[in-house]
Image 1: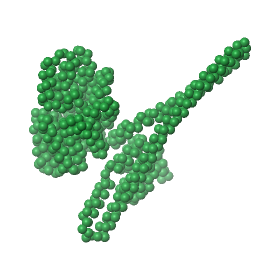
Image 2: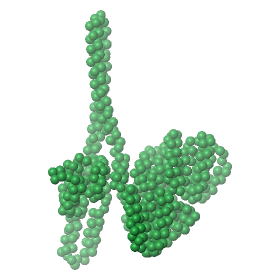
Image 3: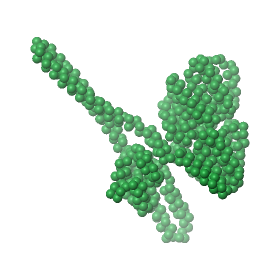
Image 4: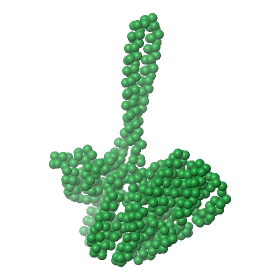
Length: 607
């Protein structure tokens, strides 16, 4: 049993998300030697702090204890000489050390300290990098929505300051998060952007990392040849760089490929190679993945005792380090192993734990929040501007009313004064005239500002109307495309029925399978969902909150009903028959608890 969200390349993805903290990235042992010699000659000044932090970074993936030692020395010296930038970076490197040890509580503590100091300087690049570091921790803890929010904040800063190197890291992080959520189209977009930047900058180790990530996407699509090719290219780079951590991760990834190919002996070789390398490196994350992989390999070979032993080791490590997604795979593997050995009581208890953990990690609410974040990233500013314009319009109205009232009071006061002091009639008349002119000018300015605000609000409303038209156009295109595909399938089927001995029968059959496969893809639905949520914000969240028992398929159908599509149009989009749509709509009506006199489209429009 395999659960793609728990693949070992998860840890390689994280490895390449760590922000670059020095001017030369991923150096080999010659760089650490050079830095050590420079450290011996340095004085107790800012240059020494930088050298200490550089060494801390160079050792995080090789000898993590040295990372902590150098970071502590850098922190002490930074405080002594009041060097805020060095202090912030020292905190950040201490966070890296604890993250590498899977001590997430301490990692977030030190990252928060770093963020506070970077903001006080201020240092935009430092702020963005720490936001990315914290995003890594949140994602490992299974908090994808918070991780994505951090990534988008960091990306916005890095693009503004044109830091391509760090931007690539963030793009890679976002791509991997979407890959884990099985949104492969979004994942590829972000991963390829990161790869392009790293190639341009000559970052070989980062290129190796993204090769492994892309290989994992091919694995999800069951293109095993491409997955192996990309992983082997990544492994060659890691070996040339003497990067043990990278080698461990790629061996684990190759083991996953062979497991999916149902070649457990080949998988064992890869996982055992990773285990051997990890005997000195001691990466808990790598060990969790390796033991889960060995468990699955032995399970495929029906060597249940060894499978259970490895799954148990993975589960213990995952519980100790708080890696929830790896824990999920361990629980599932143990449940299957005990079930294969006919110990159904243990299997049931473990399966129950697995289900509870799965539901907490991948609830509908979490998915909706991720989609909302992606949409808000593009539209939030426009919504804020509309609200601001409304407030400005209200303020202009109050200002105009106040000016009118002030004018009335002033005119009344002038009349009283004129009656009481006729000798000063001329002076008061002049005063009143000037006051009136001033008030008229201010009122004209207020009216002009209100008119400008109305124009700006109208422009933004037109843009939102354009989004609604885009949704309609996309829906019609989707119906037309699926309808054409259905007609092609029916035509080919008719040819096959009328010409049973046709030499091209095998080709026609393959075409039908390809067309059926196209109906099963989620990309069209994901694109439709994005357009839909830009127009009908929070529809799925609110509907799920009122009716939590609705399935993902019923949520899709509800969206089509809200758009008032007929049975045939809905059937074309969903790839099923109109009768099936009719049956599904009947079930949906029951789950919505609607009476016979209630109109389902009207009810959904009220959500």
